Structures are given as structure tokens and as C-alpha cells.
Image 1: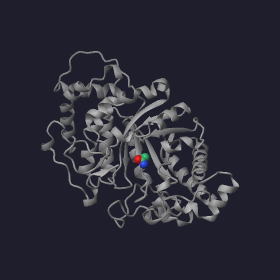
Image 2: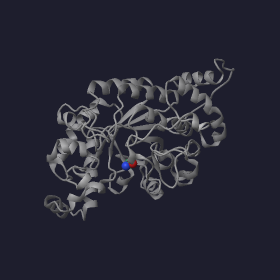
Image 3: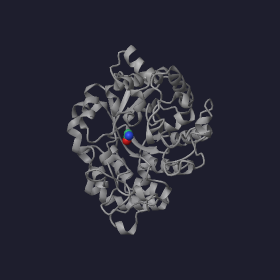
Image 4: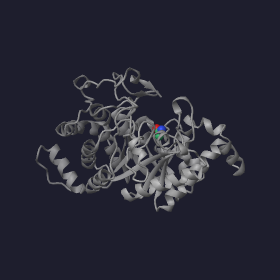
Length: 412
Ligand code: ACM
């Protein structure tokens, strides 16, 4: 499959001609991924298939599908119909937008389409936080919350919560052959205010000697890890969960907090396998050019050159643990991405640089050479109908507007 893709790529560079050559090639990393958040905004199966086609051409091999979060639940679960009749209603900009979600048939179709292109699809069911869409549909398992974080968490110690999660996961594992299921675990503190006052939770913390609400969160993660393991899968979690006490045999860590490099090191020291998607430079919701006005900025932004250089600036941190580093991915959160045009613009051409970095060994990667080849990829993206940003001529590809005034340049 990859030999064919390499040949096609060479023929693009050679305008249809390929010089006689010998290719001896293998990827630097086994996990070469792209994450798409379809909870904040939903893009639908044709867009996903178009991206899978391009990913395959770039020899990217993991599609991490963020299907559940605050604004909407996006996957049909037959046992819990309110997840889609109620939980799928709304998006980041419009809490009343008509329900959008993938039926189980559509999920199967996309998973098969990806498999034909050597791409594994890894679903994310975020818990115990970012669970708003679930908990407003099934308030009996809600962990409360405050203000704009109402229903943000699952109730962390009711047996009904764990039964619900187990039942939902039964349907999810039947749809996704991937050996991994992502269960989130991030940013629980945003909306766990009720845990501090709920008598049932407080009693549980005392009875189980959990110490405090962080101990409660870690207990929840251990239970979730056991449920995932009982279904024959390995869980993936965001880097908050390295302190939860889950055995490294049962979990893979996704490192995202670029300002907490010690979390990456600690995960490796504790024996976890790690996938790297640090916000800088691997979050696609950061702007890519100084003149851009919509997106995130955090002590800088994410240029295509920064992505090409990754992971060399931090490689000294992982040097002793090469076997535990599974790979890297570009992650696109879509709070400020409401339509296909902005989706393309934030993704491309930076995803091409992700593919370059994830594939090419450090000793043969040359970012200046990559930038010389990039025009061929831009032409290819244009032929695929992608509205990409042109780093060589920024004015020629104007930035698509902000969906909303408050979306302009968000720090952090
Ligand atoms: C994350 O960005 N909350 C993983």
C-alpha cells in the first residue's frame, strides 16, 4: 500500500515521470495520527472520508475521533437513545442546532473505509469530565457542576455510572476493531464543583480512603481502565491520568500539555507508552501565521516549520525511552472551526508536515528541503478541493472569518 502511495507521490513530483530509483523506507513512528473533534462542530461522513483519503496519501495511519464532549454526543448508542435524540442536539455556537451524529451503520462504513487505507480509527469517549452531552441526557448519572459547567462530569462513584459506561463501551468496542479506546480524563477540575459538597461523594471519599476529590477522580479512572481492559482493549488517556495508578500495561498516555514537559518524562519513567500531541506545536486550533486573527496563541503559535522540526527540540527528553514513544499526532479542536473551509485551513498544509515528521528519521529530515517540496503538496491539496493556507503567499489564501466575534485570537 505504501509503496503505491510513494510511487504516486514521486510521479507527482516528476509530473508523471518517475526516475529509476530504489526506495528503502520505514516510518520513524508507528502512530502517525490526526484527531478531529466533531462534538464542538460536526462535519459529516463525506468530509471525514476526504480527510482519510488525504491521510492515506500522506501515510498517516491513525484517525483519533473525538466524538463526545460538552456541546454534543455524536455516535448512535442503541441502548441509550437519548444520547442522540437529546445529546446530539446543539453545537458550540448554537445549543439548539438540530441533532447531528453518526449512525452505527455510518461508523462501520467509515471504519471500513479507513481500514482499506491502512488507517486505524480510535474513538474517544471523554470521561469523567467533558461529559455534558451525556449527563444532560441522563441526569441520573450526572456529577453536577456549576454555572457554564453544569453536568460537566459523570457522577464519580454511583454504580449506575459505571454500568452505563460499560454498556456504552460494549457498543463502541463492537464498532471499532482498534485495540485502543480513548477515555479522555482531561480537565475534570473545570466542572467538579459539586463533588466537594455532594454528601454521597464525600462519604465515598472517606469510606475508600481516597483523601480528596483528586483521589476520587483517580479512583474513577482506575475503574474506567478496568472496564476498558475487561473488554479486551487498552485505554488511552490524556496526560492528567498518569497519577491515577493505572498499570502501564493497561494504558497509553497522550501528552498534550506542552508547558508541562515533566508530565511527558514522568509518564515515560513510570513505564507508560506515550503518544505526543503537545499544544505547541501540534494543536491545529492555534494560528499558523502572525497575520491571522482567529484561533489560539500561547507564547507564540504553530507554524508549519515548527511542526517539521518536531520532535527534535524535545528529543533529549525521550531519548532513553524510544521504545515507549509510539508516535505523534496533530489534534484539531473545533470550538472556532464551524465549517469545512476553516477546517481545511487549520488542517492544511500543516498536516503534511506532521506526516513528514512522523515518518522521516531525524537524521534524514531536512525542513528546508521539505519546504521546497511543499508546493507539490499544495497543488495536490488544491486538486483534492482543499482550501489550504499558502505559507509562501499568505495574502493569496485569506483567512476564513471567525464564526463568532468572541472567537478572535484566544490566548491559552
Ligand atoms: C485537551 O486539550 N483538553 C486534551
